Length: 144
Ligand code: IPR
Ligand code: MG
Image 1: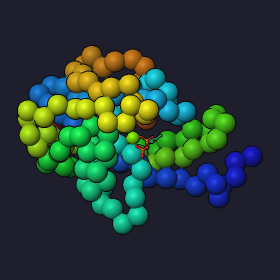
Image 2 (image 1 turned 60 degrees about the vertical axis):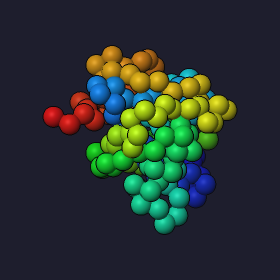
Image 3 (image 1 turned 135 degrees about the vertical axis):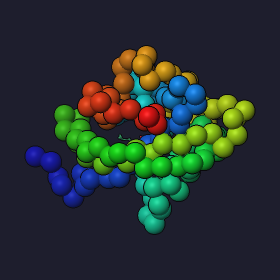
Image 4 (image 1 turned 30 degrees about the horizontal axis):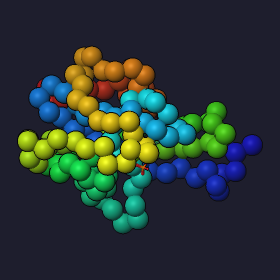
């Protein structure tokens, strides 16, 4: 039985950082989604806007500054089969680099194997489940 007080839903903001026809992904090092490719992002802190959270998480994880933030979509994600069950509402934003010459750095190597740019039509595998679910549902972060 899930202890609903301990396992209360949390909000996470992730960023589709677009560069040409590519998007930035990193391979997770975490008990949740270990070795899966995921968008940069993380937990919403008290009082933050989605844009502020996206900007802070991107800086903390990759060192990159971002611009032109827009809300894209959200997904509701239940990780019920884990030793410790989690429920995450994931807010997905779109952004571009503030400085097109900036390169991503792996600032938190304990949590990520490294960052790379991937074409949307040729995404690496395996994808972290929130992203995989969105892709399977036809989600595409690129403007038409
Ligand atoms: P932090 O805040 O540590 O960057 O969180 P995260 O990247 O592990 O985000 C959790 C994502 C959810 C969907 C598991
Ligand atoms: Mg993170």
